[in-house]
Amino acid sequence: MKIKIFERSSKMKNRIFILSVLIVILSIFIISCKGKSKNENTSVETLFPVSVDRVEKRTIERTLSFVGNLEPIDKATIVPDISGKLWKIYVDVGERVKKGQVLAELDHRHIDLQLEQARAGFEVAKANLEDARTNYLRMEKLYKENAISSQQFEKIKLAYESAQSQFQQAQAALNLAQYQRDVSIMKAPFDGVIVERLAEEGDVINPMMGGFGSRGGVLVLMNFSKIKVDIDVSEKDILQIKKGQRAYLEVSSIPDRRFIGEVTIVNLAADSMTKTFKVRTEFENPDLLLKPGTFGTVTVVTEVKKDVLAIKKEGLLENSVFVVENGIAQKRNVKTGIENKTHVEIIEGLREGELYVVEGVIGLKDRAKVKIIEGGGK
Image (spheres, rainbow, N blue to C red):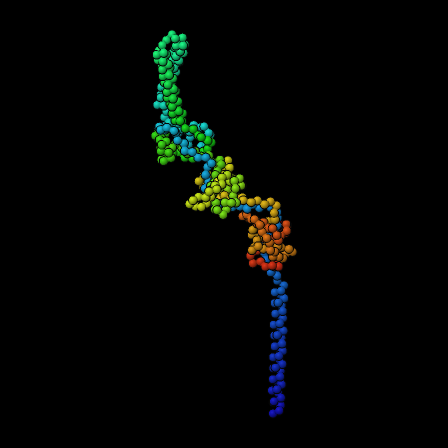
């Protein structure tokens, strides 16, 4: 009986021993795995990919931007000063013309006859005046010598005065006929481009109708070698705008070009309806790339600072900048000045030549390790 109890006790001890060994081995394995995992995690460092640029000196312009309608510097509807039938049009839409060039003319055959008649009447009146003047001078001499009576002299004097009046009347008739002949021919008042044709040959033109309908005008001439753009400026901004300031014009049809001009007129009285101030800007357009009737963005330069430290606006985050030194991004508070569309002036906080983060700012923390993926301060 004692032998059996002893055998059971021995078996139990063996089992406990084996179980203990297994537990120790399992514990060692788990600890080993945790230690290995911990070592592996600590060996991997998180690098934030960023793009950088260098702090540099540049010229910064403070600007105000507006949208306006492009208009030609000169525009005229070609209309004769008298009514008549349109006889000939010498130009067509799209043609460039010079100042004084004949564009169209009315049927002036009846005017030519009137002009011929007026010239003949003028010559008759001129001859009569010469004859009357000769008689007057001769009779004046006789009158002074008491060779004729005062009644006779007065009669000759009245005849002379009448001849003078008739001559003046004939002169006026001739001038009128010549004027009608001249204005029946329509000429360009300035260099420009024909942009519209309002009538056809054979139409009766009546200048009293103005620009209403095809019978009120013949052609539309524009000079847009220079473009004017009128902009509406608020009361808050008008004090910053002055005549002579530089202005830039950009249009969507020419995205890669910026036209340079200036402010030419600043209206000091606000519009009663809109409460805004009209400001005119003008831009040279020698190649006629800018088209009247389209819209553009006018940027007026209100202040210019030269040789100031500046960074790209993408690198500024709530008045702070991340400066990269030895692969580490250091957050630096800065004081800013004026800015434009792309850059901002740095008054305090940065030095010329320092690298700063341009892309990758969002989510970046102070003292974070970074990896420069492009830019490199070039």
